[in-house]
Amino acid sequence: NVAVLGFIDFSAIYQKRKVKWSNDVKLALGGMYYTDSAGKVQGLQKTDDRIDLASSIGYEFKPFWFLTAIGGFRTQFLDGFSFPNDSVPISRFMAPGYTSFSLGIEYAPVNYFNAYLSPVAAKMTFVNDQRLADSGAFGVKAAELDANGNILKQGLRFRSEIGAYFRLRFQKEIVKNIEMKTRLELFSNYVNNPQNIDVNFENIFTFKVNKWFQASLQWNVIYDDDIDIRDSKGNIGPRTQFKSVLGLGISYTLTNVKK
Image 1 (spheres, rainbow, N blue to C red):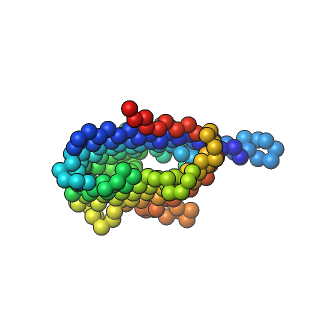
Image 2 (image 1 turned 60 degrees about the vertical axis):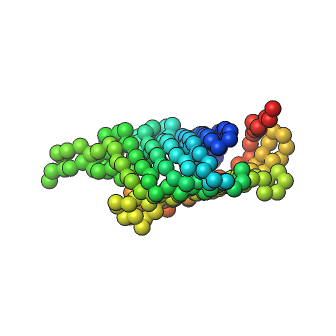
Image 3 (image 1 turned 90 degrees about the horizontal axis):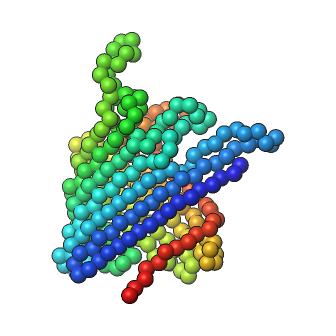
């Protein structure tokens, strides 16, 4: 097996007087190439694929406390498949696509930690593929069918939710040459099952080997009550998704320059 993964993790922060503007870009794409002992190709499986953009602007109304607005966008680059079936996509670019907006209070006592809480947050889901929308994928309303399975009314390609949003971020070199970067996001839909909280958790450790090489250890946990997943026994329903990645690669870091 041969696996290749590339990712970009970029942050830009502008702060002057009482205004702070933060931007985050996370891009990743990777896959694993399978062959048998004779060298015959068995398949190519995607292991990571994401576009994750976020921007926030805040006004400091008292020391360490900000009135902050946040916008975010998430989707993927390429079609996704249920391996080994590589003919029917189960996800595509903007299927799903997520856009979010929120207004709340941010607490940032130090530059490597902040917590944000919004009582008014909007989450919008796009499924830009009618076949997936008709099946009710990613929480949108499925198509209405007659007794013979014919479509009477197409499924919706858009879903909006209003709820509460919480975000926790931490990024710091915890010991020499080892950096920890954590992001936890929670969302509760006020209208539909508010007790079932959507979770998006990411934790990354980077170990600097030398100027050009570094190792990374990454964990992700995702739970969305509106997304049905088929398990190994054929049961369908919401599931907690885990991902763990250990890698060694070439890395180049752009650092802040003060003038």
